[in-house]
Length: 323
Figure 1 (cartoon, rainbow, N blue to C red):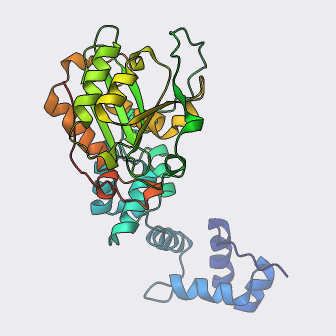
Figure 2: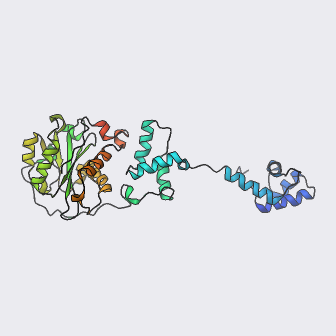
Figure 3: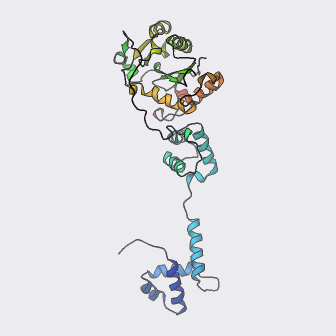
């Protein structure tokens, strides 16, 4: 015997009305309608009017009202939680970061990242696409390297094991983020263990400019927090030997066409692009605006850190920039 249950239809309610007016018993009605006697009894008990009469139209109306009341409430229908989620999304937090951070803080407000994504896709949260990590974009196509070659350098394969394992602070990955042609560049350096970002606004990608920016940004760091840097083969790193000498550090170069070897830096550059999309004008960005953006990124929770922020993990919490 099937255990499934279906609700009475308007047609069945009309038949119950007719059969009841004819004085047919509940058991007989059940046999004629192919229903359980308890179902007929419950239908009449729920929907009889005060004077004991049964009206199919009123029974259907009461049924729909009950169905509406018993619909499960959606988590983000709660105004306080909805406002909190929208605020963090507008601040470029991912749904997973919001979910994880709420759990980490033991907040009374809890919502899964899957629920947040569903709400976004259904249009319940009015969030611009720019606030989502990739905005629906796929990976960039591979392009052939046309820049010069750096020689006599140390490769990533010579890097200390502590850098590979992320066991110590002070091992950095470095790169540059370009704006529109002639509109400035940003140098980014990310600590491999904590994800803490140090960034520098620069007018161009010249090696001399990068060297000055890098030395200025890390000049106040203790030796224990500038153990090594891993960068790509861009021409802007041609002055790496001067940087090594001035900062008393080591610079290692990733293999050509291997951005995954600096995956943390690549991912962080993607986060920075949420604030500064491609072809933006970095020359028009003020020092205060830039500092606020870097602070926002360093205070954003990360899954691999147990949803703590890089700022909460890194020993030196200054936000440094160069203009």
